[in-house]
Amino acid sequence: MTDRNVEKKRKKEQYVVEEMIRLYCRKNHGEYDRETGRMCPSCRELSEYARLRSEKCPFMEEKTFCSNCRVHCYKPEMRKRIRQVMRFSGPRMLLYHPALAVWHLVCSIREKRRQKKSL
Image (tube, rainbow, N blue to C red; front, side, top):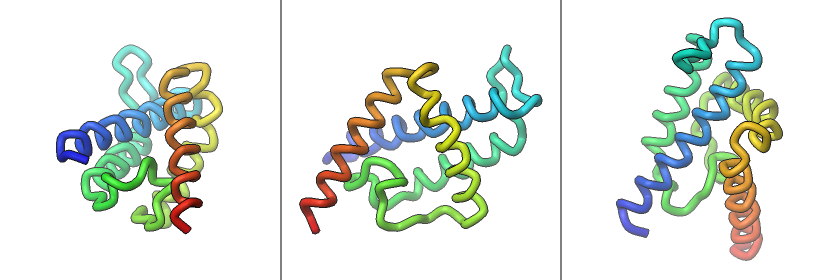
């Protein structure tokens, strides 16, 4: 995979995670600003943390999403928060971002099959 493809993949993953956090914030926090799309401070912090972890990920070329990665680089507190966001936003993404949800599902299934074959 070329550096350009890896970077494109990284940006797409970051976009999906940010949209999931944005959806979670919009539905759960009163501080979300619908006009500007600005998240509350807690969700902005989580979004920036997720973006930073993605930027530093050495496995981006090989993996699809963090949930499929064999190394979990999130701090325990942040991992707990992102899991909460994913549990809430995952099913709702079908309503709010159907194309992203289907793409994420297909990629995840493909990756899990690939991992089983390599064992």
